[in-house]
Length: 274
Picture 1: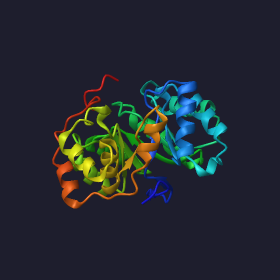
Picture 2: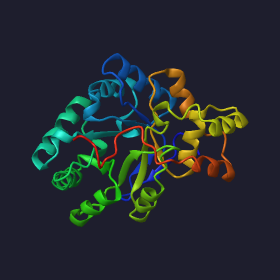
Picture 3: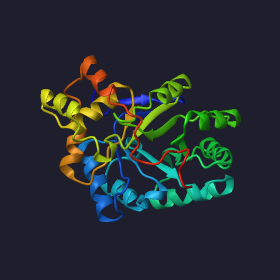
Picture 4: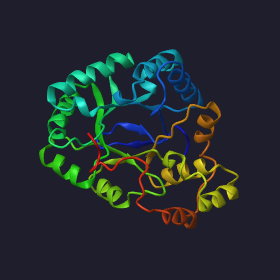
């Protein structure tokens, strides 16, 4: 494995296994610098969203990086207030303009807004058919949300990006998605920092002379997940990518698996205040 490793989506598009997230990264200098540092480190995948309000900074960083557009994989997401058919199409154009791009590689529905996400998905299918996006998917969808969507969808979502970390391993959802050929992508893979003092992972980290964050990200990759750690610190951005020179043993993977408590750091999609 290396930083250029990809996973093949259902439509044949290659998506990097390790990406860079920009949730809670301020637009402007902070976004520009952190994304440029990530690209310099070797990250090819950048994950933003309309709700993060930093698409312009991400776009500026991409432009200033000097990397060819086709060598990057850019994800953005539709916010809840914009769900619905026509409003989705308009919101996508706004995101594209802010990013300064001709297309995005992956467009995601940010949350499953009840009564709206099926119409929203029809707009996603149009954007996909029109080749304005290379792949489409969802975020924060439970199995029952996917069941509802799949009854109406012509295109199966290629990705489901969900909160996923050792305290919320999402095994039933991962199995469901695997059966439907939907790639699972982990947001907040470090549990918003709440797992970094975990004694079990700390003991494993010492064996490999790695950080707890590096061990968790390695656990993600060995489970076949896509993962998108976020940082605004250059040293951490580099450290989070330095996870390809060691491999966790099956017994160590099982120890980390055993930490699951179905414990969220973010909202439950069934109880989110949309």
